[in-house]
Image (cartoon, rainbow, N blue to C red; front, side, top):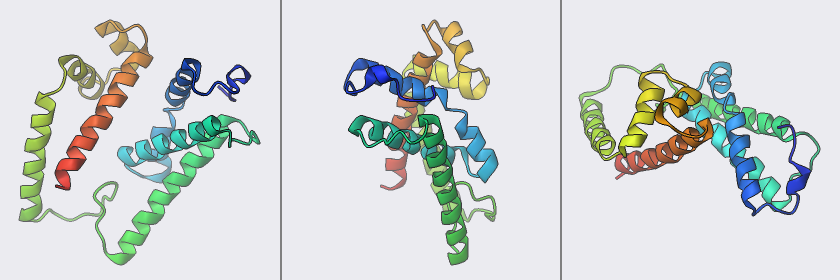
Length: 187
């Protein structure tokens, strides 16, 4: 999808736009592994950069601020690259300041006993969260992360109409899990 469909001009609150947004998001997921490899950042950081970039692009389209000087794909690619570079700059600044970053920094030493206790608490909390998961979601996560299945295979195996349905469920619930776990780690 190289540009915003002209048929959606002025209809940004329609279900068609929501479908376009979902398709646009799923169509460019390949940027995540690209960002991990190109910039040596973690998958979480690449996913954050990707999600924020897509949200910015769609927000600008929705508000009419997208100037159409280039294709949406090109604009998304540029925003994504800039966000990945921002992660690198933050990592370099943290190294210079002597601060240990929690993700994407492989130069860490062995954890202290205090950190090990915190990790054990986090693992216990994560297990409790996972036990409360919808069994259908658990099947999706198991297929994706433990068995390495792709979205098409999961859709066929679990009886979903499209791989986009699987991606949507996965994305929505992973965000909720991330927020729940993040809330735990800062409380």
